Length: 275
Image 1: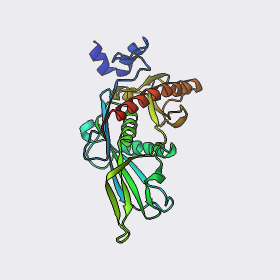
Image 2: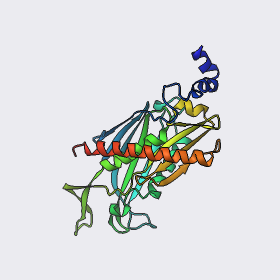
Image 3: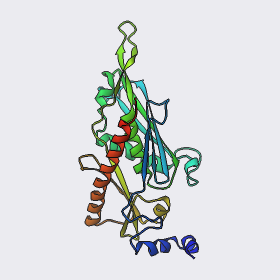
């Protein structure tokens, strides 16, 4: 009977659980799925990390290359995040150009790391207006089961903390960059934003860290991003059910608690890697 109800009336199926303050997978309404992090997963990348949030799995690889600084920021390097949602991660994504969802997530993450000033971009500049580092941050979803934004941002920040750049000098004769074979330096990271997403069920109930199934029946979604000092960095709510002031404050408070957990996970995992 339960299986039939879940197939025929998924919303009603969830209501039978939520009225008891529990979800079908056994979690409480505000409970986050187990989070597993592995750093240095890709040996050919300059920095990498793999995150498993429940069944949602993302891997981030970062490659550093030389380029010319942007005209409006001649003293800064460049960071380019890109999220890929290939068909292998879920049947809802098709081959071809990046989906609208992937583009929205890529832009959201780019806005977050820029607004939070995560990286000291001036430290990526080698010669003003002439030469700098560009960090290509490719985040690929391997298994999609909801809450992709949270997983992608964890993977990106852990991978950035894993990056080591070789010291660069300019040859006086050829004026070409020369990388040191033994001098390497980590990135200068100023802050570590953490995202916490919630699904809105029946226009009223908040479900933290929603699965794909929960996202499909949700009447709205909201993602809250805070930094390690607990300050609100970003709020992303793409339409759907409105939130009251109390509900929004509840989301922020829960996000601040979640941020501490993720920061400890990243710190402990990155420091445990022998570089």
